Length: 76
Image (cartoon, rainbow, N blue to C red; front, side, top):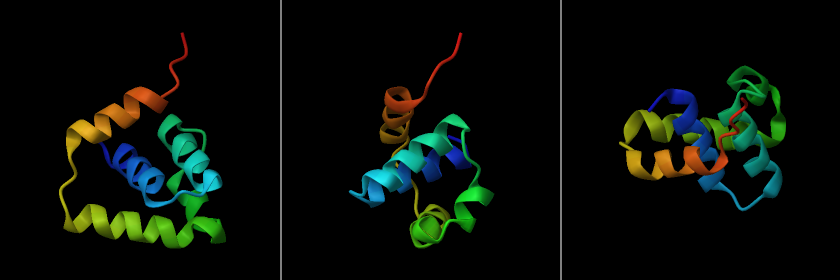
């Protein structure tokens, strides 16, 4: 799994806040960048947590894949 997908998954799972979950889905789909999220004060803390968690721990790739399959928008 790539870094962006893993960060989007961690952001989504780290909060019950619908706004943060929507930003995680936007990140997954490429509608917003990590750099843009770092500028957003309401998401900064969650993003820092997700990045540090990703560096220190291994994620269950199956859960990340299921998240991506559920929320990734496919355009044809």
